[in-house]
Length: 234
Image (tube, rainbow, N blue to C red; front, side, top):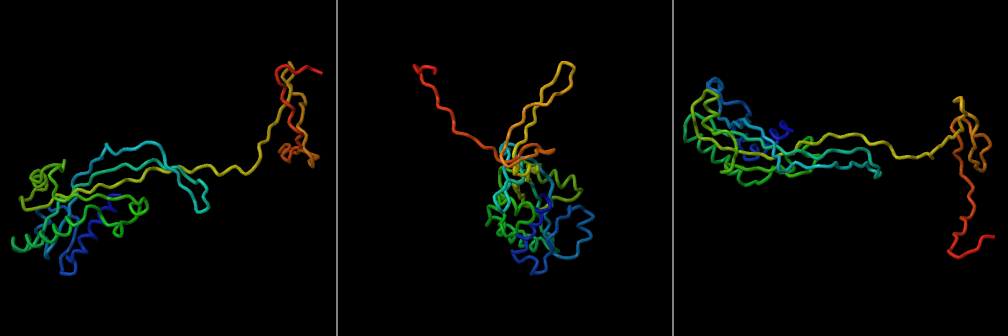
């Protein structure tokens, strides 16, 4: 699921016209060494925090059907996770970086969810909304200054982007539908433990039960009349 969110976010930023203007969109960690090797205008979306949203954890299991309407599997409910990205712009001049960052901000705040057309893999199969929160004030994640300190770089302007995405639950194949009748075998047992032949159910049009027992249709007579209170016995 994580790589599918990466791809959806990269595609969304690509639609903003960044790649068409020669700007690279990458997912690398913006370390000091990485910044020194950079040679072109770049927008970097670095994933640095992953947390489960326990308030959205469900219970029970969903059912999966085939094209004929037969139950083929049972799937546990998806679990939701919050993925937080540090989005930065890199260019030769601060003015160019701010222009790029403004372009990214305009693109991201126009969407509350990642568009369905940009989703791939399990995210596309689930058909659930993937939430997008850009520069929100309620981002419960490490501060940007702590991230820059851990990366060994210098603090610069950045956007905090949080994506709420479902992780598909595990699927267990369901047993195929029953298509054959139930076979019951019965036998009396002697005191010494040896079985004796028991009574067999009689079915019409079946002469020999064979190893599988009697499985043909059974002839049934009319149901007996129910006795009422006060009726005399014959």
